[in-house]
Amino acid sequence: MSINNYSPFHDLRSIIFNLPKVELHRHLEGSLRLATLSEIAYENGVDLPTMDPEELRPFVQVVEADDPDFKGFLAKFSLLRRFYSSREAVMRVAYEAVADAAADNIYYLELRFNPVALALNQGFSFEDVTDWVIEAVDKASVDHQIEVRLIVLINRMEPQYAPELTEIAVAKQDKGIVGLDLAGDEQTFGDVTGLVKVFQWAKSEGLFVTVHAAEAGPPSNITSAVEKLGAERIGHGVQAMRSIDVIDLLRRQNITLEMCPTSNLQTGIVGRLHQHPVYAYHQLGIPVTINTDDPSICNITLTDELIVTTRGIGMPLRILPDIILNAAKAAFLREPEKTRLVNWFRKALNETFITTSLD
Ligand SMILES: [Zn+2]
Picture 1 (cartoon, rainbow, N blue to C red):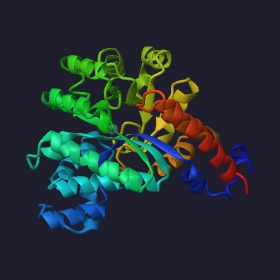
Picture 2: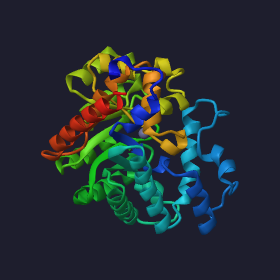
Picture 3: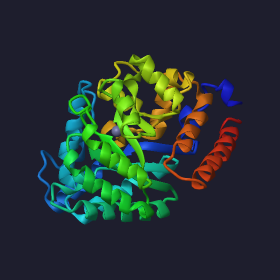
């Protein structure tokens, strides 16, 4: 059987699970296992509404009873900040985030984290928490045979930390930090003028840039991310469909979109999955990728997201290897590493597709 005439008797989940995958948009702070949360809370005396993992679920995960809501989604992160209570806790969370990605057949992962979120509650230094994340991720990537790069995230609501975070990211490029991200409330904090200098400096020092833009905010946030901050990739970009000029910009400059369908559904950015623009963007020639955003908050894996993309959004299964390859091509790597990664995935995807699609 070829992938072009997929049989309903064939297990879609196992086909997609078996594909070697790339993930570019995953937040460390959205990747905490529920059981780990409870154990950390017990060990470190974290004050919580409940210690039972199942009872804890609605506080840290989107559940069926939740209405789709952007602010409600972000509120889940505030409770999570309490769990980074020790060096061991930060390292355990980082290690498990990588291990979980590897268990889903992800072979290349870019994991983003906000040192402020990890440090502030306990008064750790941003540099210390960054070093802990690097150490844990290094160990996990060896133990679980997955290649990982790190992206330091700056919150739009906390621009005062941008210079220090950027200095740390630049200084630790030889330890696997490859880029900067800008995230947070882009409706209220859409103006990026105050961040231009620091992002330009980061780029001149060799970092790549991705920006959460046009998720809940206007399409023009993509324009400023690309033209002012030098973004090579955009997180989400769902609202780009409201502006032909922005669609044109994405196509002309070959800007890759990091799209996260379930997250968009849970935040209410799209009302129904079939309204999600990822397949339309692909047909328009914009490089799109599929990502989890926050696997534990959304309660998903990348395999789930790729299933959602075919079953819920209607992208044909045969296109998924191209979407995975888009992600490899947009990895924040320099040559010759980039070409090596793309060639490895091209070959591995071909082989896996032929193997899994033959009965
Ligand atoms: Zn995100």
